[in-house]
Amino acid sequence: MILAVLEQTKGTLPESSLEALTAARELAKISNDQAEVVLIGSQVKSLVSHLKGCAKALLVEDAKLDTYAPEAYAKIVAETIQKRSPRAVVAAGTDLGNDWMSRVAVRLDLGLATGCTEFKFEGANLRVIRFNWGGSLLEEAELRSNPKLITVQPHAIPNKPGEGAEPATETLSVALNEKDFRVQVKQVLASEKKGITLQDAKVVIGGGRGMGAGENFKMLEDLAGLLNGAVGGSRVATNNGWRPHSDQIGQTGQIIAPDLYIACGISGAIQHMVGCKASKKILVINKDSEAPIFQRADYGVVGDALQVIPALIAEVKKAKGL
Amino acid sequence: MKVLVCVKRVPDTGGGFKLTSDGQRVDTTNMDFTISPHEECAVEEAIRIIEKHGGSSTVLTLGPEQAQEQLREALAKSVNGAILLEAPDYESWDPAATAQAIAEAAKPGGYDILLFGNECADACNYQVGLRVAHWLDIPCVTGIKALEIQGNKAIAKREVKDGWEVYEVSLPAAFTVKEGLNSPRHPSLRGIMGAKKIPIEKKKLNKREPQLVRKMLRKPQEGRGQIEILGQGVEAVPKVVAKLRELGVI
Image 1 (cartoon, chains in turn red, green):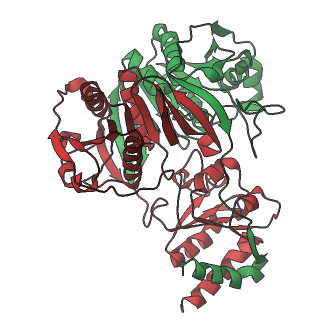
Image 2: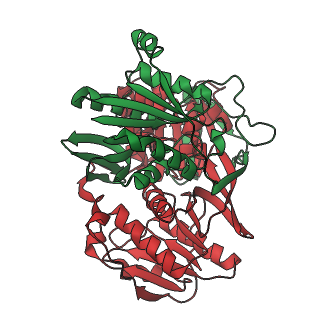
Image 3: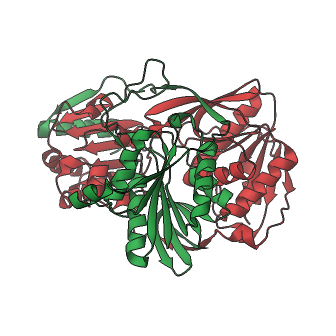
């Protein structure tokens, strides 16, 4: 059996969980096995309709577990593994998924391969391809301990809805004590930021060193407003205080995957490119035609972003009849 | 307050990578070495905690002799002590082996706070800090961007998609931190000179059998074809607008 461990929030499954579920179902299929799913939270029953093609949904319905309680979550999965002996356990390679599975791994003293993009059984071993350097390099590695624990790199395996019947449900009961809640979310603070997020936006506009100053990001905001997009920045932009750090696109910031990424005055260091290379299309505006980003984009304008962007804003307004 | 901060020596790759001919590692000929941006922030946080609450900070790495450079850099910024877990073959230590050695080295130290980067820049395993915390039986919060110590507890904040999760844990505790937590300082000349005199404690620990074994590194396929240059400067704007139309953006 292949076990998928899925994050959910308020009764919805994020795209990364659906990708992990797809990966688990495919791993089950190629090894003539079946997939089962663990879901935790008070509203998880409504999610069973998304789990077609899986044999069983193991549910832990407890309102106390609606916010992430890492040690309790890990204990539930570790005990489920001991009871049901899966060959492999698959979760999303998000911050939460990596945290959760690392805790499961150390409880059972097992290896864990994070950020996988491909995997296949080779005898007793699982051969994985996984991200190194945020995806600038790929590592082929062997996971020797059993069962195999992996997290799936977001955007690497496209979500394919399952086919067939909905799974049978079973309620899991795991005894939790006070210590299992020694790490828990006490409070959730809403973001002070308004508007569409870098993760949700179909168009993202990024500014780098070539923007020259924080106030020049206003023009990127204006363009984003016209294109219903969001604005981010390179590490230079956030380190210089031109943008808040949470807007950083790159290996140590956010990994984005919009339909279009417009990179303005960004040279294209590998640490930035791993944050944006999942974009469907990349348009570059940079005055240095030798900048490495021109090797990694679909469309380019060789020009100073500070001149091109205002002209582009005027033209887009005209095109939209504004 | 006693703080331990753990770092990893990694090549400063700058513009790109070359792999060694056997595909086993990054070719580091003519490359400088550094630590990841997350760990730079962990070092800075260790120093700030001691400046505010008193006590001492220690930096630890598992790596080759040359990793003393990274320890000296932290000492130069005013970390108080340094431990090198000698492992010339450190690249083949998997997360469990690394964490077990760190936990063993940390146990007698009686640290109140252990700091790690959320993930190292090269292997991106995301798990050493959590594994160390488990073996020391202390709570751990990962990926934090704010930390406040209040007596014998700590408030840590983790950024999520639409806001912040606030965690409260009692000390001793471990935290893995992300860039954005603070702005790391540069070492002063006086700090650099002073750091040379601080002895580095060296230990050699057993390496357990790895569970995750590297076979090969390779570069990913770049999925994009030849770039289409739309023009030079503002003259390119009409073509850009046409392209935005074609892509369905406007």
